[in-house]
Length: 190
Image (cartoon, rainbow, N blue to C red):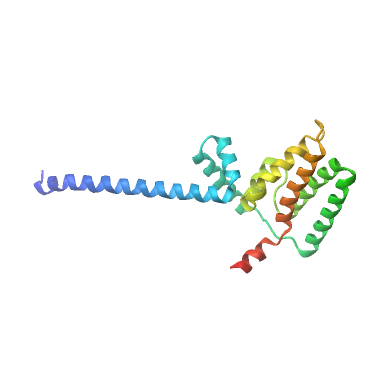
């Protein structure tokens, strides 16, 4: 064996070990940054998903998958006429709450679903709707889940007026975000 090669053997091994350590540290830091960024962006939805899937790594993967899914959707702004129509419909739903709270909550749910559909979100399954909404509107996803939980109890058990009022407030939070011109606001801010 060549004596020069044996001299470099330990040095080459040490360099390889150091390179592997650097690579693992870089991957760890990147994964950590991704986790922190997702936690900040999704807030309570991040915690809910992490609890549901049992680990933060799996939650991060799930949230990143949501983002990829929503990127493929044709989410669009409302045109001014649609925006005005939805705002008028919301006023009617709210006014109806005084006389028939349970029916108003059902109407609010239908109106929010219709608004989501008009914006380009698929609306076939509630859990998928909530997941899709969480990508662009993470701060109100918890509201949407709470409103839906109350609305789903309407036919099965007695729901108090205070619960119905809470459902309307939760639906309103999502409605307000969905009806606003988000792209124009983001572009104006830049």
